[in-house]
Length: 483
Image (cartoon, rainbow, N blue to C red; front, side, top):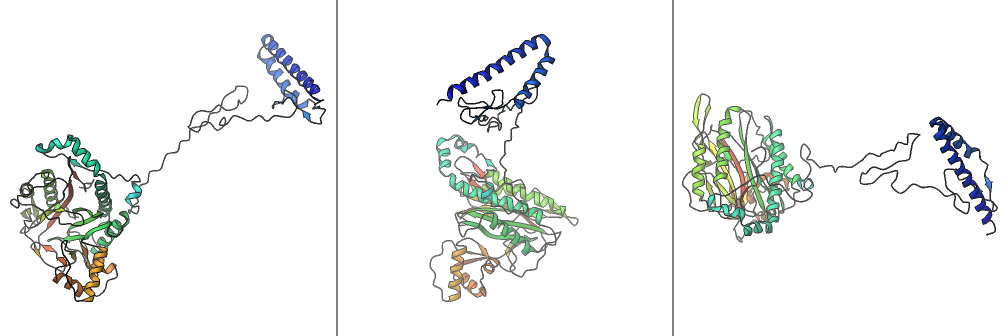
């Protein structure tokens, strides 16, 4: 405590000397101008370096006040630290004032380095599940259409809008399945080329679906076997194991495949033709499908949709090998309603005039599909069967063959009432099952779906979309950039 007066005196002496120098410098600036002031600054900068340290009575070192760091009253050196964030700037990207540099006193400014979140994009070929591309779990709506005049009130009805809000989880399931369908077919359009094995085309497509939809038993996966019917074969053809059929340049291929989430099925199809001579056929069928979608709606009679489809379809002609053919609607093929885990829900949408007077209802899903042909416009069952499906309403049927019982258990566990093909059974490790499968068909548990063929030498095209009769408007779930 006895050394405090001495320290204070030293501090005041140093302070007074510094103040007097500042006053002299200001006086010289006013008289001699800026040149004398700069000279005085240089002298003052050199003075602290040569100034002797003053010894304090307690053995410490007291630094002159003119040094860069201030001193505390007890003679200890106080570190001068910049305020938090003074050099690094504001974290939010604001400008920060830096230390003075040189006589100009310019200030440093740190640039705003804002980081943008990287948006995950699908690879080519697709390998990222769609749930990763939409982390918020909300999937896009591609197309909505208003109902006709009698049902326009639904668009502004508060009750109907609230009903849609309560069913949002259902809508999201089918939109997710539709997004998988869009991304898979977008890649397949680039992948498919003449010279590929039909088996390779089907397996490539199905593996993409399994990856993108994150296949999970009966909760998510493939809704039915991939149909890749060629030329006069209209539907239900797929290669069985060992089939060596190769896609040719002059082939007309119908690619029909489905996806599902929790049994909510997206059923859509398109036609691939490399030779532009078939373009009028494809255009006729696509326009007919779009007409069916436009005409569909709550309280609309199914027969009226068929009449509109046929009128558009048969207004087109195609010339092949110097002969002109009218494009015909295949009269014994139809669109259909879709139920949970049930691809054919019970109602049929004809593609020719006539048919049933049944009306569409709110909350129903429909596959609007049309088939145009250069042949007779009528199909029959032919060729080797590949498609099968367990009957939806079948009850308990006693089975005698042990292999049939084991095969039925495999079908129930992996497919339920969804359609399957023989390649899928092979993939699951089933062997020597043809007799057991025939037994299940004979007793009515499983229904076979053989290929459906028009007259040999003709050409058939197909386009199909899944639509949903929502309370306020209809939604074309499977619509995409391609069709």
